[in-house]
Image (cartoon, rainbow, N blue to C red; front, side, top):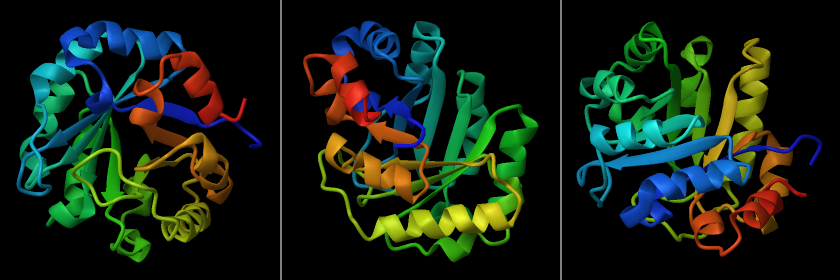
Length: 219
């Protein structure tokens, strides 16, 4: 890898009985971001956590708190998660009727605005919001559950998104990838244009968090 990616471990794979310690441990081991997966049982077939846990994460680490809203009507909840300490709030393109308005509202609150695409959603759907984005999250599995295998079809989407963003002059926009990320495929994901990798079991499923994070960074 020409430049090591930022690593955003997903707390869904952490031990919730000691969540504060788990969050601090991965940051101490080299993770720059902490990924908070919010699911409502409607947009995806699982229910997870809300603003209260997000606030606890924020209080446990100086890392960037990276909140991924896999919920219907995410615009109703962006303020609550920003109030809880989210530094980045990502909504799904598929869940937003007025995507540009939602992204602008997130930015107006001082947070970074992200949009996520499910595997079957074309990157062209973001053509008219490229200037409003701080992050694009490419789902490399169908969202809802951890432990799924990476879908190689998403590599071309990452390449196309990077070209689209560069052509639009938004060269600072992050491309984050979530789903099935491992040391075996991290280099190809980064080479395609991603610079933030979400990892659940690839970090929290290992005994040595630093070694796991270093492996994802290609060290």
